[in-house]
Image (cartoon, rainbow, N blue to C red; front, side, top):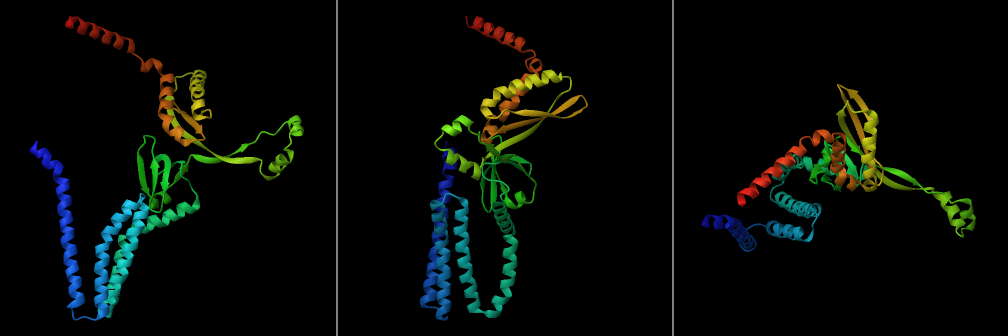
Amino acid sequence: MEFYNSFINKPSKYKIMKKKFYFLIYLVLVIIALWVLYLSPWEQSVKNLIVINIIIYIVRKPLNSFAAYLFKKHSYRTVVSITVSIIWSIFLFWLLYVIEHTLFFAIVPFLIVAVSLNFKNIINNMASGALLLSSGKFEIGDLIETNGIQGIVRETNLNYTKIQEFDGVEIKIPNSSVYGSTIVKFTHDKFKIFEPLKKEEFHKSKHYKVYVKMINKVLSAQIKTTTYTKKLEILGSLDPIKLDEILLNVFNAYEPIFGIKPDYTVDTTRFGRVRVRLHVKSENPVIILNYLDSFLRDILFALYPDRIYKGWDKYQESLAALKLEDEGDEK
């Protein structure tokens, strides 16, 4: 029990030690700043720059903590952190330039190369993210496949693209990987055609002028639909007529769920097997995400009921026999 309590209390003790460590560093920096201002023999400009750098270093962590409390999105917190770091770098380079010009021009090129190498991935991700956002390859809510991952796009920013897979797991992919790979987009635009009014309704309608304007302007409204294709291999021994009947029964059962009746095409036939392409359609890709597993399961149960339920009766009988034995032992 003591070991458990000590294990549980370790994080709090670690936090207390960490706070004491930061407090000690800040105290030393404040003492150095006071010594620079009142006791150092340097010029006033050098003193001011040293004190400013110390103040920025002390304020940097509280500012980042306040940004983390204020902004929920990681991108906003990153912008605040980068902004503070850039401001600190400007004053640091300024101090270095005031102290020694030759040293400044000798160190800056190496620092620029080092920073560019360290932030190469971040720069690539930000550039790729800007290109993805401006190109319109996909939008939030689209069902796509990229880098071998299929799912719905939940978020796209300058750093990464968040995709929710069929099992509910959310994956963050760097934008440089997304932009440089093949993107399969299952969600696409289609046009919903309005049904025209009948002749009698047209003459009776008081809003025929509005109807005429609507025809002249736009005869259709742009909406989105998702068509997800899934390859399925089945045994070639199945009768094609029976296969069509079985699949249509499952398709009819899932039509009210998806909103659009699923369909299939026969891809190839080889080695005693038939590859079928299932076309699952819906105006809402989330519905496909939630019901695809059950849809495939029902197709499997409908195609091979004898094999799946083989021995099921004997299993039920054995369970009933075991239950009777247990009841007899209790008596």
